[in-house]
Image (cartoon, rainbow, N blue to C red):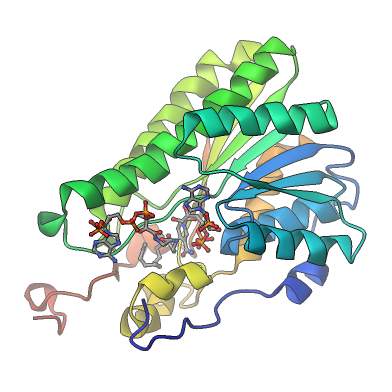
Length: 290
Ligand SMILES: CCCCCCCCCCC/C=C/C(=O)SCCNC(=O)CCNC(=O)[C@H](O)C(C)(C)COP(=O)(O)OP(=O)(O)OC[C@H]1O[C@@H](n2cnc3c(N)ncnc32)[C@H](O)[C@@H]1OP(=O)(O)O
Ligand SMILES: NC(=O)C1=CN([C@@H]2O[C@H](COP(=O)(O)OP(=O)(O)OC[C@H]3O[C@@H](n4cnc5c(N)ncnc54)[C@H](OP(=O)(O)O)[C@@H]3O)[C@@H](O)[C@H]2O)C=CC1
């Protein structure tokens, strides 16, 4: 959490997301049904707004009914179609019930965007068993349960589908969250494997790796750590949730119809150059963290 008890206001507001300019045509996702896990969170929220603005009915998924209902209401005020589904992605039975409910309500599901996830900063050597398992369970197991449940129904209904998994940059520069690097590296490898296995089923699977994207999820990190984030990439700024949302729509819309097993990194070039110390840069590396 931040140094004080109040969370910082970070990221784009609903009012901004409702009108943010986009390169996509207004009907790019017309009549599609898209499930967005973490849909009331920072990145997931931007994804939900953009998909709905492009004509989709968005099923927003999370654990907090109030957050989900608030988003759905904001979207309904602008004649955008969305429904709230309280589901913990770590519970496979609940995930299967979610997809049965959405399919029964709409007669189809066209896409799944897994944005639910997260972690906490801590030196790996200090991870507790519970803490390690919490990050792996949320980000690897939960994402998998959502992927498999969607794919089984696309197979059974002989319906095309596509999945976009939000991960993190695993190749360079994210220090202090080795548990999430392990979990997301697993998601990336899993996505590549099933992209091949599920191609005969007309199911595409891709990943988007955000860099420093300003959202309220950053409140698990200290203000001092957050202050350094803009300097962690050669563009010397934070990205926005809308940057990630448009990357997701590229894969989810017909624009991505011949792309599967890929990963699009949206990080301002950070993985090529920058470094992000979520727990403070140790003195050994020239930082001031003793
Ligand atoms: C992440 C990068 C750092 C900088 C950010 C910008 C840099 C750019 C690079 C971007 C990389 C990604 C950024 C982001 O993801 S932004 C934020 C996304 N959102 C979140 O992270 C959500 C907040 N996190 C969580 O909810 C939890 O961490 C978790 C995802 C694990 C889910 O928690 P869960 O509810 O399953 O479990 P608990 O909260 O009950 O905790 C279980 C045990 O886990 C240990 N734990 C949890 N939090 C901490 C902590 N802050 N410090 C130490 N240990 C922690 C602990 O053992 C818990 O058990 P106990 O409570 O019994 O001790
Ligand atoms: N912001 C950034 O800089 C970056 C973020 N990412 C990743 O992008 C994804 C979204 O991040 P961001 O939007 O910033 O984070 P937020 O914390 O804002 O959003 C995460 C969302 O996931 C939901 N969620 C968490 N756990 C579960 C669960 N078990 N079941 C269902 N929903 C869950 C939360 O809702 P609720 O609590 O209501 O369940 C929340 O809405 C995460 O995986 C994050 O690690 C990756 C790189 C950079």
